[in-house]
View: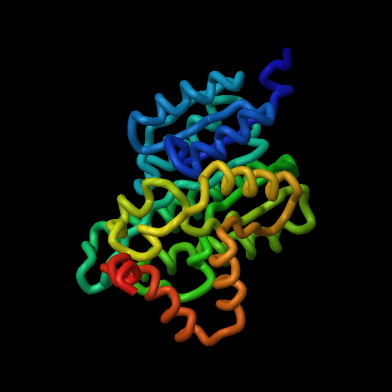
Length: 270
């Protein structure tokens, strides 16, 4: 049996459910020990399921939208005494609806989690990776990063930040042995749309990708050293491709058809 120094070690944030849990499962199935985190006690249930795969799994319950939450996680990483071979910076949240009506605190919390904590945690972990010239970083971005996202205005902007940040960091580290990969999921069958208040939208009510498939594609891209991977249904991939060539006002109009409140009923009624 391998000891801790021989077994690779991965950290996954937002790992209690959805894409984050499935990413943790990918690492566990491929021989990694894990440190997983989420903001509530459901992370303990998730870690129990991950342990059945043979991985050593430690947990941290921390709200990464808070500065102290990120520092708590990083302290646990340091206290493990193990180098981070891979980290999936995945934790995120959405807020749907008209910007002028959405709760300000909810949107500022989104920015703290989707943007501020990403920079904070990446700063801590990347410096350690650079010091030993080894490591892999997977950022969960979104296909929403590719253009304006009406009725998800702050969420879409946050993911555009993550995408740009990941690509810039990858370029800065191109002469090292550190891999940086951005995972861009499309609509995925998770709790995201319920939490974001988007169940009455066309995208929220429509068919979605399996989070296990999204995580597998993200893991494989990270291990292959790719810069990014779009993991989405064919129609969404076509929209991503179109969004790269059409004016942003056209891309915004297309996104609006999917995300406008009540668009699920409009779509059903033709």
